[in-house]
Length: 341
Image (cartoon, rainbow, N blue to C red; front, side, top):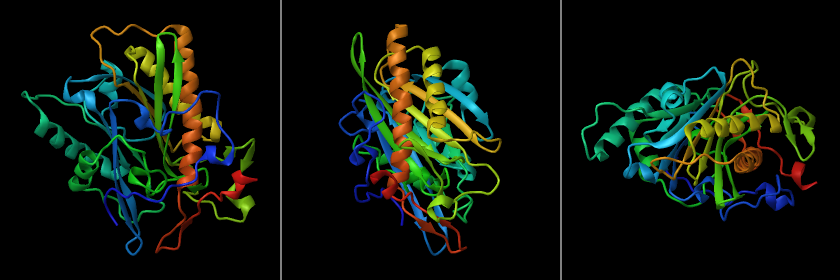
């Protein structure tokens, strides 16, 4: 099955009577609560051929009017293929939508993204920095390069401001995290800044090793009588994307991105040698000379991002469905009873 798959509504952490942190979520509790941001996903799922992959697209609408939005990038472990990382770090600017997909599809996705942007350009373009994050989904997906240009364009063209489907969708279709089936997770927070309320939204492509920590305890699949999902040698990769609707400097966004990826440690990420762990943060508000957030306001944003990422990972696990491949591998979904107790 392919396309913009809209599954039935999944259980979310807050429906179990638990919440992370004190700040309230946005209306959707999703990164699309940030005004000016669209998300689209193409899901590739074929049980007969053993294909579990896809692409997730995050599209800042401001890029229709300006050449770039302010952005920051942070790497905790660099065992990955984050296309466009060096220019993000050097210029603290994001020129294109952000794509998330599987490792060997990243380069085809980048080429498709360049073509999509050039078609919409209103002036000659001689340089462009496509941004594509990736995760290794080869433990589940038998096909190494299943994502085509058409799949990328479908995600970009289908991006909207509605709720973000989570779990086995888009770039997270073949993802496993913390021993369970995982995938895409998202959350948001209303941040009470001194200049007025703001929104911090996060989207996580969860695909890391480690042991899940949730509801005050460690939850291992083996202790639940389940086989652990994922490679036996530590590897994976995880990408955290943060969006804000307040002007920020590039340096501050770098620091926000760092909090986004380091927040994975709250839920048990191992940050192992074989994992690429990346954070990207950007603002949907563009001003000629952004005024830096005060230390007090920046602390509130840090807290919102840390809490949002923790909740997004748990929601990704709750939304995920068990996958059994033709090769005999099984990635078990997190039993909901773990959080209903």
